[in-house]
Length: 181
Image (cartoon, rainbow, N blue to C red; front, side, top):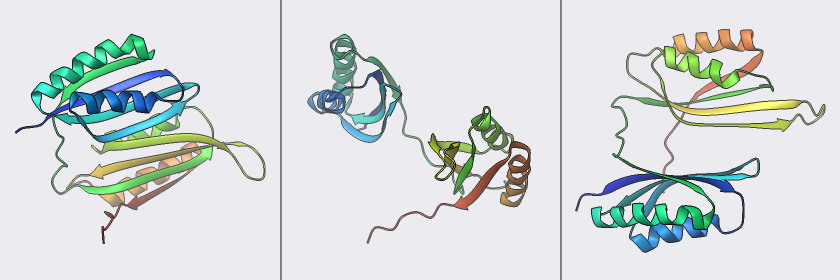
């Protein structure tokens, strides 16, 4: 049977048991969590899940999530989607930056990538304290796919210009798929 794909997002005050509550609803409805991202941001817990299910289970899951929103104290979004094929000939790379914390870093990096037609598949940022000085540092990591016809050399050059203009360190490295032995 064909799978139906659903993206479920939820945000609410962090507490013990949220993952158990949400994953239990998915399992009881007959869905399977294929991918997920979960994190505490400030005092809020945020989750995004890609769930695969047969059509009847997908309908049940949509209904159960809507009913659970108030009882769990979460804002829950449910959206049907399609499986996303990876672009053919795309080369996976990682863009990492580190700098003193400041405004506009995510925007500056994403603008360079957009200008070159490069899709961001995953992006994570965090702030932390520098080991010796305690100054606030900002770190960004983006997994991207560089399509055929896009020059990695030209991208490196543009990131180097950004590095100088924004006073940050930028590293662009190819991602090598992990081997399962």
